[in-house]
Image (cartoon, rainbow over all chains, first blue to last red; front, side, top):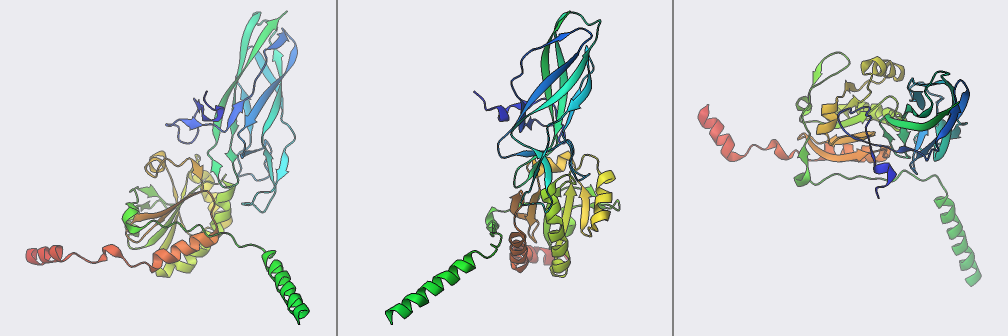
Length: 154
Length: 194
């Protein structure tokens, strides 16, 4: 059994030529049932390794790299992405409070299901771009591939 | 008399307790390798903000603080004023700071950052190759203290205290230059060829 945080990601950021050890993982996700032509709300659970924090989607400083979730176009099109409320934390390396996420949290996305999509199983694929730090230093920005299984019904 | 001594002792203990509640200084984590354990700093060739090529060889004879950083790294930001101060304070004693940015966007983000913070020490844009030859840098800041011989005397991954850096710089500046004495055999050989 390999600890989840040692799993090597396929997507690379700085240092595109070498494997990346992720601090972030997708949590357990149930298959989502979605009716053709409807709007469906999908929860993406994310788990950040203990001892780390990441910039929220709205960091105060423009030089910081925000959390971003990007969904690939497919049978379901993302119409709105809602992030949780960030926590304002003080760290020893900064005079200012930082807007961060840590631990387990969820990003909720609303998808519009194409009315002409074929019935049956489908997948929504996306990328979570994040930049994590601990109390001492920062990891390079990384891209985590995520996927959610969907059952399309009438 | 005994009571007087007891009061005096209690007073001393209170005073000591008062001292211990004063702001603590950052711990020193000086970790300079012994001379025999030091390896040569890997060579590289990078451009500075003016387009000039920089190699570690041109810094031989100087103590160099080689700092890998990025504009998005908050702990890196905390160190920059210290490095500015060290660069100014120890420049005349043969010390230099070299900043190597590992920002993907390169000078486009680094130049405005340098200008905004009035960073005066030499800044370079790193590359995957340089990161790899310096051990595969996977977190920032990562700082190498390089001695006058061009050898790596200390490596710090993550933020360490300003006092640690200062102590290491001073120790390396005060160190005798080991390789400055030309071995007698080589000296005689050179004299014969001339």
